[in-house]
Structures are given as C-alpha cells and as structure tokens.
Length: 157
Image (cartoon, rainbow, N blue to C red):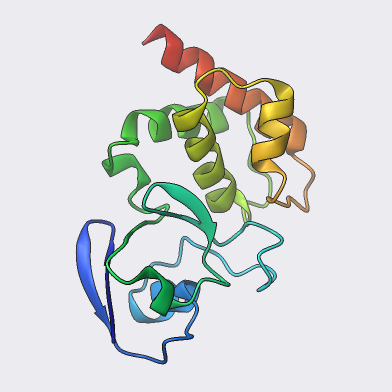
C-alpha cells in the first residue's frame, strides 16, 4: 500500500508497488485528464506535478511517491499555482493552441511549472522546458506564443 496526496486529498493506494502513477490516477481515482501517450516518458501527455515539479506519471511507480503531493490537470487551478495556471489556460484559448487536444493537459502542466520557476522565459527557455512534450498536430509555435502571452499577463497583474 502506498500513501500519498492527490489534489490535496490523502490516497491509500492498494496495488503492486510498481504500478505507474498514471494508472492509479486514471483507473483507480478516475482522474482521466492525465493522458497515456507513449508509456516511456517521451511524449509528455502524462505530465503531472509531484511536490511542484513536472514528472511523467507513466514511468513513476506509486512506491516512489510515498508521502508526496501530486497535482493533476483537474486541480492545477486550485493550488498555489492557480494564478499561473489560469493565465496559461487563458493564453491557450486566446492563442488557439489546441487542435486535437490530446497532449494539452501535459503541455499546460509543463507550461505552468516553467512560468512558476521563470516568469519571463526566452524562446530557448520555453523550448527547453517544453521539449519533452510532443504535439502531433504541430502547435509548437502557438504553445510558445501562449507561454509568452501568459508571462506578459502575469507581469501586468
């Protein structure tokens, strides 16, 4: 059994210790905003925050998160990062980032983590932070524009 927190609630997870966090979130807790993409931590669709840092939940076993705090896309706006999350989500809409949408929860989680750590990222900073997020629709330029827009809106506020 693993004990950890998901979106502010304690979870007592009963399964094999090598169960990926992704499947605990989706199958056991019904949090389906976090997506399965590749299963090898290469596409970013499964990105969540673990104690504030973005991680790939498809390769993170529940045994590795004992006592830690997980935040998913469903709750990112209700955390201490809420202001940043709301700015990112608004910029995503304003810049029409989403095409098919499958990768977007991971993209947003990575963008929020970037702006929390670096409120004025350069293009190179954005490319580095978002490099592990694959968008099959190719919306990379709009992602970059949205991150710059979110940073600018946060600076104004």
